[in-house]
Length: 73
Image 1 (tube, helix red, strand yellow):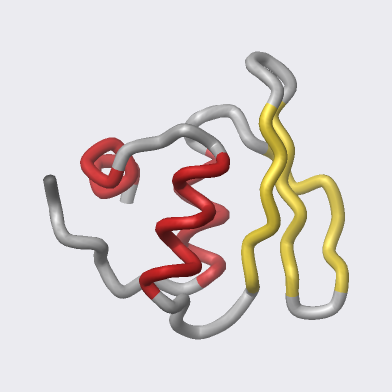
Image 2: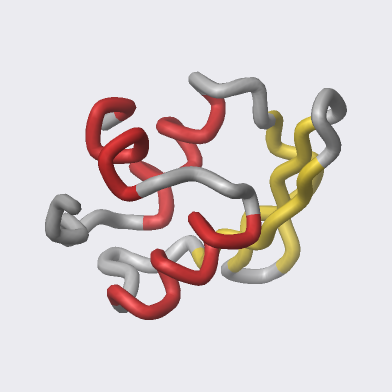
């Protein structure tokens, strides 16, 4: 298992768009992203650097492994 990288919210949003997510809306400093098939929705904080626990929670919500996420970056 790869180590979680230190990334920003914008980098996470760009990586998720590569696997079919789209930005549904922006609410304050959060990016709400959604994928229709298979359905998944998650909220990505638009911060300069995401905490590793927050990033791990986002990946868990959308059923994406750390290795797959690192490849998307």
